[in-house]
Image (tube, rainbow, N blue to C red; front, side, top):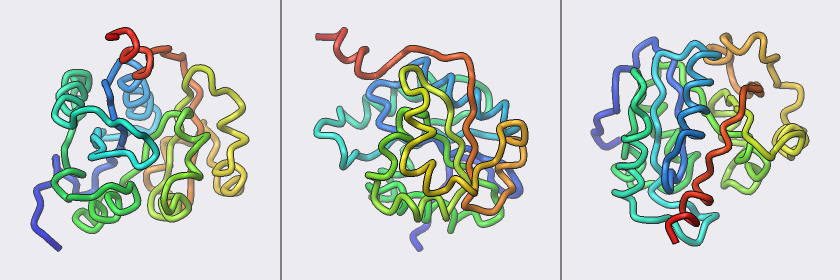
Length: 197
C-alpha cells in the first residue's frame, strides 16, 4: 500500500464520505453534507472530488471542480479532498477500499443524494460498495419515490434503518442504509453549467 496522507484525523471518528463530480459544487451539495452531518452525528464529512466519472461523457477540469468544492464545503469539519486523484483511482468501490484500508479504526459512511440512488445500480460493483460501508441517502428535489423504489433500495430492503435511528448508522455493520427526508435545495450542477452558456 502506497503512503498517502488522509484528509484529516480518523481514529474512532464518524466520517461521511461524500463523492461527486462537483461540476460545479453548489448549495444543494452543501445541504446534503450538512443534513448528513447533523442527522448521522458525524464528526467530519470528506468531499471526495471524483477524478472522472465513467458514466458521464464530460467531467470538467479537475482543479476547477476541486476549487468549487473547497469554496462550497466551508462548514466546520468539512474537507474537500483530491484523494481519489492522488490514489490514481476512478471507481468508487476502489477508492473506498483504499481509504478504509488506511483508516481501519474509523467509522465511515458513504453519503449520496437521492438523485444518485436511482442510478446507483449502474455503478461498478455497486453491491460491493453497499457491503463495504453503510450508506446514507439524502432527499433531493424531483426524485421522490423513484429513489426508494430503485434497484438498490429493493435489493437491500431488509438492510434499511429507519431515519429515526440514523445516528446509529455509522457504527452499524454493512450492508446498512437509511433514507433521510429533509427540506429540499433545488440547486443543480446541470442548471449552473447551462446558465454559463
